[in-house]
Length: 432
Ligand SMILES: *Cc1c(COP(=O)(O)O)cnc(C)c1O
Image (cartoon, rainbow, N blue to C red; front, side, top):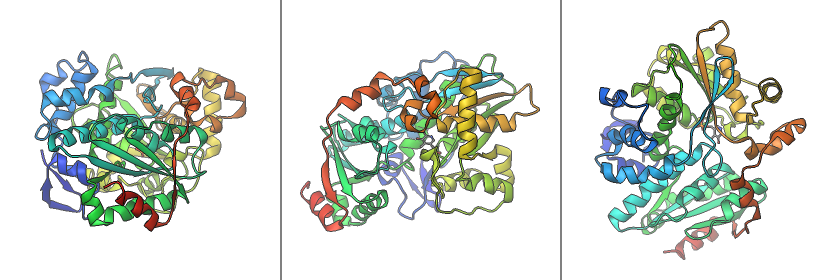
């Protein structure tokens, strides 16, 4: 299997190169040359495979030219080492909980696989990779956790001083080892600008073997298909009509779901569910795609005004009819989000987080008048992760998992960094 940029289909690259590049040099996103349907031998036993076996069978077609199956079997172990339970919520609606990983959100899956993949390439090439990542909160934690202790990699996380929540900060700054946190005297945009500049510096880039852990990286996207298989196989009997609702920001999760469907997973239709950052639902209503600056909402991990994976979606679904056949759009205000978070808890005893609720709302909208349909929404984070956004009268219902409280006790170690490029450059120079 080869890969090419959405902007230049004639240049084929290997999986390894696509992962090391992250973003293609022409600014496009890497996509596979094909998404092969899984063979009958897979479907004959997919419900009985262990999570690791299933992960190998689903991912091998994409990566086997660069990663032998025996290696892949090792690399996926930490990626699927936690459960992906499907929990009945009410009526025909289920929640697919993706937050049972170490940092309590689905991003653990992609970040862990990327770390394992880079670690493998580092061993192969006897090389050390330096991963630069700017974070406004969550991504940094998932990346730190995924890479911690992976030999051949070191990670430098830039985060805005005072710009992340105290618990997020602890999840960035308390690892040590091959993880370094730089506390930047500036905003998230300043952090991102520093990272961009470092990648444009050809000498630094090659001397340090710089790579990014950006969410557009293929090694983050592909493993996200896994939990659609692992989650939906828990539905017995498998429904004739199945809606899957994906609370979306950059649309990586939804793209991975479409990949799973292409591989043969019988999902009838997706819901592209968003907060007020509704460029994609707007596109599905009007045929006009108009990226715009993001607005702040209570589901802040989805505050994206120009979804980075839209280019992959367009590639997968070339006509407007393809889009409307594949998904329906739905967007919800903060008011609705918090109100339904509350009623869902009161009526069904299910405490969702502000992102998952948007997925639930999406199902509620499309399943009206379809009594035979089954709906699954992705619960993308644990409510404790966004505790400050949960309404006051529900605070008591928020259970803080042990793995989160353990972080709060640990000691922060961060290096202060100016937002000035020369200072950051000198810091990187000294690492050579
Ligand atoms: C990143 C994130 C999302 C959005 O996922 P995309 O793949 O960017 O659409 C939704 N919910 C949570 C909790 C997230 O962290």
